[in-house]
Amino acid sequence: MKQITKAAELQQAVAEAKAQNLEIGLVPTMGALHEGHLSLIERALKENDFVVVSLFVNPIQFNNKEDLAKYPRTIEADLDLIKSLELRIKGACTDRLVAFTPTVEEMYPDGEPTEIVYHFGPVEEVMEGPRRPGHFSGVAVVVRRLFDLAQPKRAYFGEKDYQQVAVIRALLEQIKYPIELVPCPIVRADDGLALSSRNMRLSPAARAIAPTINATLEQAAEMAEYEDVDDVKEWVVDTLASFHEVNPSLCPDGLKFEPEYFEIVDARTLQPIENWDAAGDLGAVGCIAVWLDGVRLIDIVKF
Image (cartoon, rainbow, N blue to C red; front, side, top):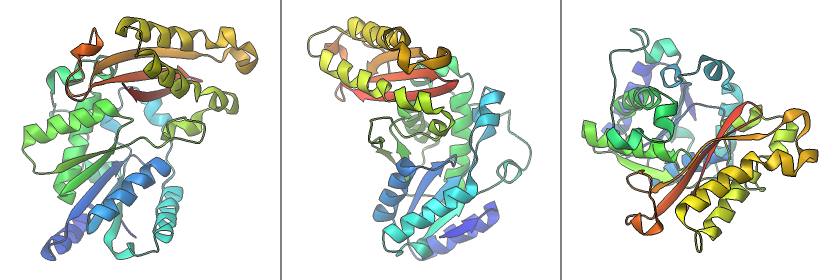
């Protein structure tokens, strides 16, 4: 693995790869890597000749300054993890894997852009969109810059951020880049919790009960066989919101789940559905955001 901090140096590495007709894969991340990220990198290495992994905490996609300040930054540990992946897959990728670790000034040499605003219509007007104004536009700005720098044939994103995947797909349609978007399955801990960089901010007590989110969603998927959409939605929210009352011994010091939303939507359009038959060819997906111990966790379930 080679670490690159400068955009010009990355462009040079990409140009050399292109000159050899190598197919390039891109794995955009904000660092604080875990096995979920490593699964994206490993898949990219299997499907491409040359892989760029970006590790960059993008300030313009945060609409909450406190969340930006608290976002974990573990660059040295991240690089060690990538090296451990290289060893795990026999080290054959050392000369074809680049870790791009720019500063904010390197990514935005003219200052954080405010004039570039992307709009994606209905796909961004639900769930995360109204709750995180400007978030998806900020994501689109940095992802497009990474596309321009890395010029990938394929780009890899995790399905936990299901709405983000839909937004990136819409971005590619807007800018007409011939890049294959590769959504990758969620990687979970042994207890079912979706791996997330934010998990490391959970207290031990909160981490112990956090798998309840996935367990509740799995039960919701079973309920879909005999309950209507609204009843399933209500049950999920009520189950999590009342967890601390039902299990007080597991929730010390006022610890509790605070559901922000749970929506059941068409898996392609992301528009809410009123009944199961309204889902299109990809079926339905349930998307949830829950606050726990001051940490915002998201997850999905496919119906």
